[in-house]
Length: 193
Image 1 (cartoon, rainbow, N blue to C red):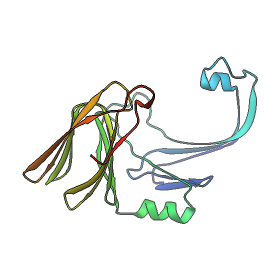
Image 2 (image 1 turned 180 degrees about the vertical axis):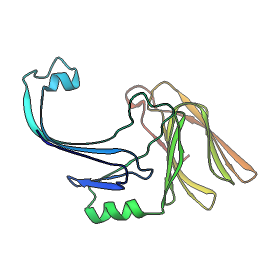
Image 3 (image 1 turned 135 degrees about the horizontal axis):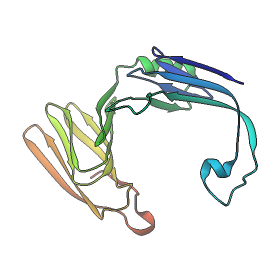
Image 4 (image 1 turned 45 degrees about the horizontal axis):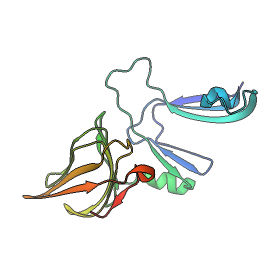
């Protein structure tokens, strides 16, 4: 019932106008076939139907094995990408994984850095540039030749009233005490510090 294949050398997959890229490789599994289940079981919500539904489903995942210890993986999802765009992105030298650990995940794509700090910490971008935050946060930073430009910062945990961010460029350190949105706007981003 259905098809399944796996590969340890696959670099990218394209399906349904979405590109999936695996810059570090891995044991990639692709499945296609009929699946039966209910929305209630999937979402664990009591307000949706528990009636079984069957449909053909595409499934793609990295098989980590059983109980991996200190394993790492990386993937890129490119929505609305053509096959050609997916292939070009997979071959691009513009994508650099800065950090991929339990405390910080950060990627540089061209001049833009995307970072998820899961706790306070420092991100070393290159030998001349680093960014530190004192709370969990999401950060988008434009930089060129160790100089920073626009910054977007948010707290998706909604737990912080403010985040202190320090940017060290060469011997100069610039600090910002960022007051975050509250109430209904908690979690929203603050742009261009």
